[in-house]
Length: 205
Image (cartoon, rainbow, N blue to C red; front, side, top):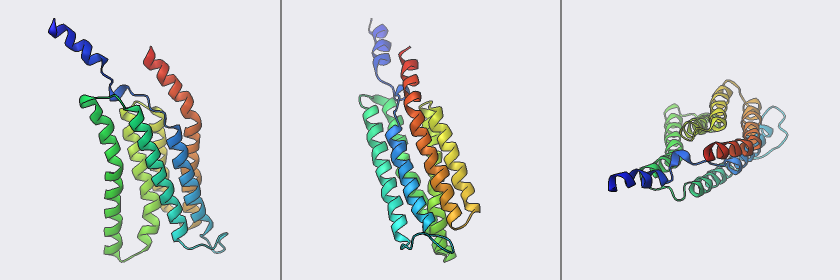
């Protein structure tokens, strides 16, 4: 009897792989961060910039926006994974830990390159583009784990467009990140409620 009851107890335990995340708030917060941060950066570049601002202001807007997005994402994920115990809980925890690990590694790479090449331009080029690549790769992992095609497609788009933006210079680079990157977040946010509802129905059936 004890052997027969064990699988039942195990199957009743929530699994991180069966969690249905609602990423709408996360997508909106990151989308606004990209639109405002990169958009203001684009307006300050060029031969005749629309805005005459210190470079620290657009960078600060982007950093604050990204930090807000990370906080929102962490809260949404923590609420969704509440009640998940045992080995399955490790899935969500490892994915959450991947964010600071990824950006920590990026910080080391950019700092080392800047010091080795003695070129400050490495920061201005690599932070906006490489951070998009890191976020895209993290979304690819999250989409694969949670079987979320929308998140996976968003990650693919962000990784490719952020990397391709390196071929551009000045304002066009930041416009691509603001419109193609930030815009894709807002499109994903608009599609997320429908995806979330379908995922819940599929899980219930």
